[in-house]
Length: 454
Image (cartoon, rainbow, N blue to C red; front, side, top):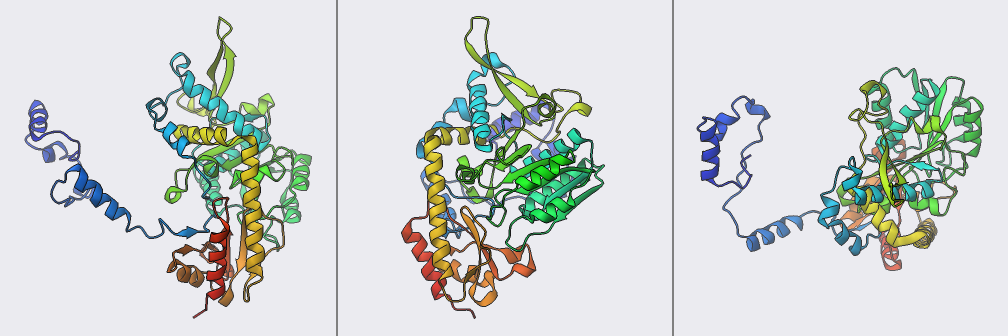
């Protein structure tokens, strides 16, 4: 309240109207430990000096201008300046509710176009209006499978992003309850989901199998046998895609038999921006039974009484809209502005541009894999196909030391897998996008080549 730009006279008048002497009296019922500490902000600055001061503070952020090969769930793809300017239009960044279609046609059309883009990328006929992020989308997909199958056993591949697995565990077990078991299947020797182990874990009580596609380690496996095994016993296959650009060069989840496909959409329309926000993509089969259990919102196309094209919120199954016990989700919403950013960028990129960007990611990653594998003391951990991310065994056996040393050279070398698995402390997860020119790749290879373990 102290930073709302009211003058002292205005604050005094408001306090007088409620019979209080000070702001402290106004908040007297709030415990001291719950109040924000007083800040010494110094003297007030005019706009010019304030902007200089803020810029100086921002330059202290280490890593802001570093050459980065960090992926592990967030990817630095090109984001057009024009898209950013369109997002700044007031009718876009202040628009929120689509509940009154007669005054929200622009918002609804953006949602409709977003759903179309997601449906085409994931290869399934029905997509919702977006979700918070990829991890909550994965958890919501697992809950949806439980509702559809009336079963309480979930099989999750350990090749799924560890934070996604934690979110599934939290939502399905702690919040929803009633889960008989959540079985985690270990990673295969090639860093792919162990297809045989996944199939062996499926039984008559299995609601769904949740598999990363590609995996957290960047590898790609053929999941069709898993889909067939799941469907044979009435279970569902759920795929989770960390970077949807991969789906421009590999078969879509729908093509390999997925019943529900989710993804983290950050790569398609949002800068990494220090880890968030993201936007969850969610698509499923089109039969009525499945559609009715889909969480979130769904925008449909219709015509008005004059035959003019229009859009309307067709499905909205959150507790705000229907009885709580019938709601498919009590935590999800569509990330409206983030979904709009994705829609604008992907519309600018176009279908061919989407494929071209993916092919550049793939070719640059393959070039870097080959170059690193030729260095003494380095090797690729897996020979399985990858898209734009891969795992390297580092010289000296300590990935954290490599990351620290290259950081001094303003290079973020990748993600130290020892942070999530002590047995992988010698392994580095490296990500490449179309943003990495040949000069950047060479600089990274040279830095790795010159690295000397302590």
